[in-house]
Image (cartoon, rainbow, N blue to C red; front, side):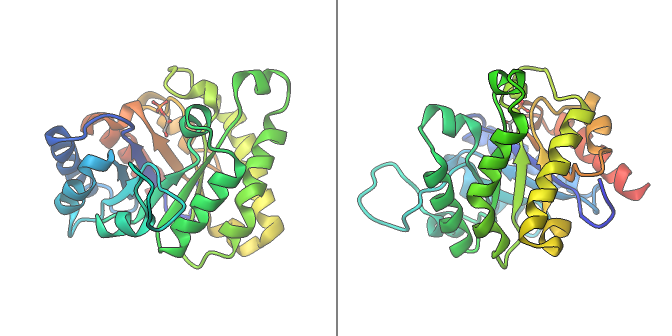
Length: 257
Ligand code: 13P
């Protein structure tokens, strides 16, 4: 982490806690925020729990994110949810281009680009996810792949007047228990910051780059200590207030030190 940027700890609940348990978990996250005043906390419940979680977090520093968005603002798109609806439900952030969406729902560069535009146009802060597969890493293509994903959204992100974030999530580290080594994560994060700087130095300095992929209390300190890791996008360990709180507490401690 770097004192210039406030840490951002975000929980991506994926397809978990869509009902009452989500409301309880959101309440647990509000309690965490009482002890982590220097950390931005964001939770991304499933659609069905968004409004209730937003209500539960109202008046607290915990912000709500959606996990997905549709690029169009309204129309005959059965089953889809638009940016303005997310804003209405109480969202401040939205995750865009998660590898699970790229992999299972065919989200290509254009779709990720259009969704990012739709979010920013409605005042929703995007967390754009990028990352390589194991095959790509083993072929030595990590930086090439990640650069392509970043460059595809860079013009949109760089001209945004609202904060945006990038999450580096190596696909092979997601849900596997195998996190990236801090030095490997730092290498990619530093490269991402350099690519952002090509658009604007000031933009690169202020934009938070999160790490995601088996981030948990046991490895939080080593990953969050990296100079260009400004927080985390956490899946499994965000499903429980205790482990999510433990990660947020590490970020709080590192900020204070
Ligand atoms: P895990 O923390 O479960 O590996 O998931 C990471 C992730 O995909 C967050 O978006």
